[in-house]
Amino acid sequence: MIRSYVALVRNDWRPLAFGIVCAFLSSPGQTFFISLFIGAAATDLGLGATELGSLYMVGTIGAASLLPLTGHWIDRLDLRLYTLLVMAGLAAACGVMAMASGPVGLVAGLLLLRLTGQGLTTHVAVTSIARYFRHQRGRALSLVAMGFPLSQGVLPTAAVMLGATDDWRRSYALIGVAVLLMAAPILLWLIRSLSSFTRPTDIGSGVPSRVLDGLRIMTRSRFFWFALPLLLYMPFASTALVFHIQAIAAAKGWSHELVALGFAAYALSHASTLLLIGGLIDRLGATTMLPTMIFPMLFGLAALGLLEAPPVMLLFLGLMGMSSGLAQTTVTAVWAEIYGVGRLGTIRSFATMLMVAGTALGPVAIGALLDSRVSVAAICGALIAFGLSSALLARIGVRRRTR
Image 1 (cartoon, rainbow, N blue to C red):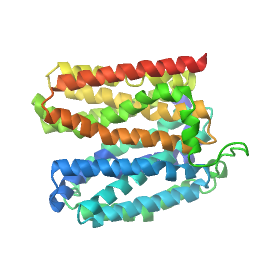
Image 2: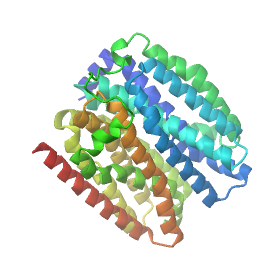
Image 3: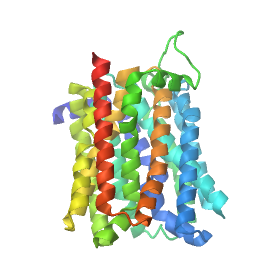
């Protein structure tokens, strides 16, 4: 297994490095990174927890709605131009966030950060790799996805050590400048002479080219409808649990330090799983792996709901990190296997729109249950039932497609 990864990196290190850097740069729009600064921003702007959660939901749903309109251009433009536009957008989003002076400015900053960071920068990373690497797609996507746990493991600690979380305006302004003056040139340098990597895929004259065609292609497929609940499950459940992890820990009597240690376990498990899953996808196929990707998280939920011992936090977040690693690579590879790579950007942007919407709705739903004093055990039980049903439907969709 190691030899195959070494050979892959030796032969194509530039596109892989490009993808890893893009994955890392998605962090300003990711929930874990925003959460480092959002508390200080809320205090400065005089916002309560409920108002803050509502603004975050509005920003996230707005970003999800705009993703198909902006994401499909990766199928039409040279990747160098598209990457430059995305980096400029991410830098502008950081600037808007730094200048926010009230709820309207904050929700605008959050919308742009979620769109350009979590949405488009991730989109560039995985779409470009999935359409270029046809024979070792699983391994290539696994390597590129290492940028996500790398950012999760490095940036929160660095931000706290540097005191960046207190001066949130200055921090976002500096991030924007760094993206524009450092990150963008590095990305363009990595792919400057890789025309086979940067040019759009030749889709042929008979393939639709309008933005809504990605939606039409997916929704006319029976597989999509069977797989949709499972595709929504991971972003819905994992984002909600991470967003409310402190409240869950408090209900269990666990410390903040234990939660921080749990996120380290999450990052380690996530990264380790990425290295293992790539070879399995290349050998078995992404559609075969799809229904099984949430099972580690389901075992973690069972432990979280039934047990009270503090080490359960480490076990739960570690198993959730494993499922996140499985999903990170598997889902993009599924789109390439099912629909091909000619319209991969268009198709993936619509799928991501739905999944990002799940990240917005999850914290609201679980937060309402916690506010209503529903027990952690009952919440975990409901999420397990939802997950098992979703996995079963996805399995049916895979079997019917292969008949």
